[in-house]
Image (tube, rainbow, N blue to C red; front, side, top):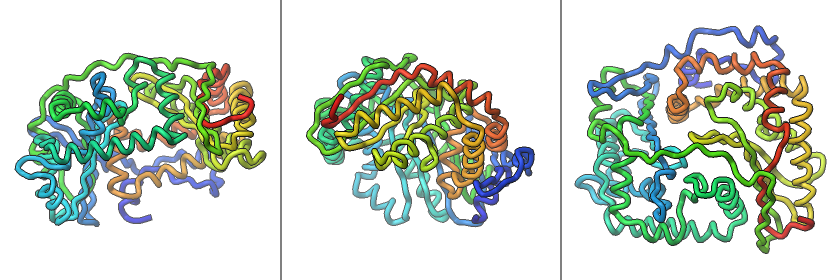
Length: 447
């Protein structure tokens, strides 16, 4: 483990599957790693979480705004996605070529992305180029140009991706699942947009969304690198201070997955059928989220050790991979999953998946499954903090989930404290009556 991880992970309980320490030993708390995180507030009131590292001359910045593709206007789906592709394609006095030339000359990495609930970005630079890198980030966020040439170039790139997705079984299954699960809701729309909606997006649409969504009241910032709190505070105002004080977001209504109990088959002439499934889950602030996280690991989130992997692949050879996951959004929570299998074995694969959900809901995990899940989830936690970019990204996630810095100290203890009764109760809550929404794309036999 390199020094960066040693510093940040001082309070992470490092438990690998090979260790056989007792539960009490696993929960002994070393020096708090939360103390490594400094809360820095700029003169203008912008807050960032800082982890200072002096052993490498690198600065990593992650940031996020509430909003994302859920804020796209009807008929303009894909606006947030297209805006993310264009923020580094010219800003301020620099056109696309000049802006990217400055990034390349200094090996500055800048990226932006839009998900359903968020618009986020990151920057990574050598400390010696910190001033120029942060100034370029400021320009991208506060003075994007949306010039005609790069707009049309990126539009054509997105349209090409949309066309490819229209013939891809996995993309069709995903798009159909979300449209069926959330009809008439922003979550049911395609984040990348459609051929018609992307073709209709104008520079004014992009500027309007930028103005409505990128504001200081929903801003979260994390910084990792060779910089002091005193140095960072004024830079926060420099980069983000000229953004609007308040966002003008359209409220996203609470949602419950629709279509449960349905099975939709989309014919496509391909050798394998792609199966997507889902059912109601939990939002991140639900008190049962941690036991649900462990239950999902046992079901299909634990790779080779998960029940679905063992039953679908190892015992029956039905598919190369199969998995499940918790999808916790601002307005809803789901358990989702999927696999791909031969058309003549799709019905059998789905039957096995459904049976395992029912069995887990009825019986819950075994003591051994719970112990193995704890060991893996506790032991692998530190691996999420190996690089400065990973650290910054995880600190953003904590802020977005309204979790305090000391969650980094408490997380492993919360998992280790779970009893078999805890996880069995939550397994019943999630899968006691598992009515799935299922989408199958291909030529499945017997379905």
